[in-house]
Image 1 (cartoon, helix red, strand yellow):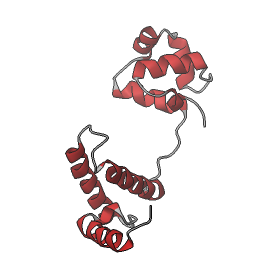
Image 2 (cartoon, one colour; image 1 turned 120 degrees about the vertical axis):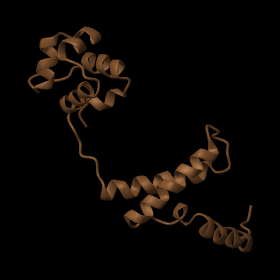
Image 3 (cartoon, rainbow, N blue to C red; image 1 turned 90 degrees about the vertical axis):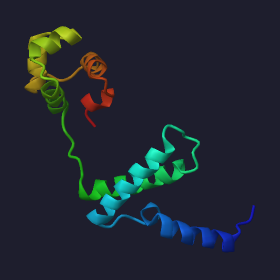
Image 4 (cartoon, rainbow, N blue to C red; image 1 turned 135 degrees about the vertical axis):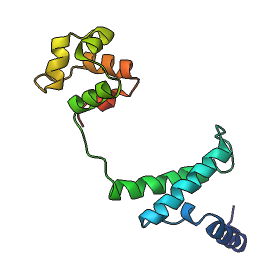
Length: 141
């Protein structure tokens, strides 16, 4: 199939006018805010339909937003103990409550939180299952 360059050029111009954030790199926070608002509108239109014609546009916009945020707002790596502490705080869990819920002794929970003991695969599986997150959050890079 050969490209119909005149038609493609005209369509691309229209996309540039209708959704500039979707086809250009995000270079500042103002553009990030606009791109995020555009993405919200597109996702609202798409709903749960992965076959919607705007699905690839949404994915492209997500890629641009993620690329900008990775450079300008990097998320620091955190260790498993910090992840566990945050999850416990968010859910107002004591060590005893968590121990009972996941089947890990309270003393082991304390050692994990205090970084005096390494997380085993069994700890990771139980904690990830309980909190409903991917096990990778509790694994070192």
